[in-house]
Image (cartoon, one colour):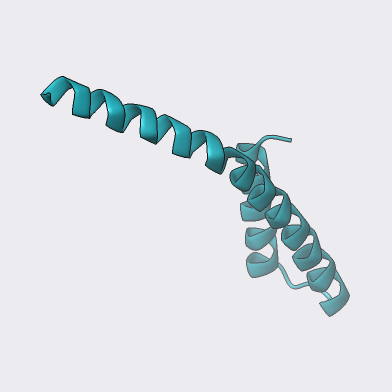
Length: 68
């Protein structure tokens, strides 16, 4: 699933927990689901960190070359 979908899902879970009267077991299950989705988001972001670093380095190189 996409990062955007996962973030929307976490937001939906948070709203449900905040706005509904739920049994403690239901709250814990929703919380656990949100944590698992959060872990997936962190994995996705971590895997993209290297690519982002490379893109930033390329951009910095271009900027430096333009001013030399």
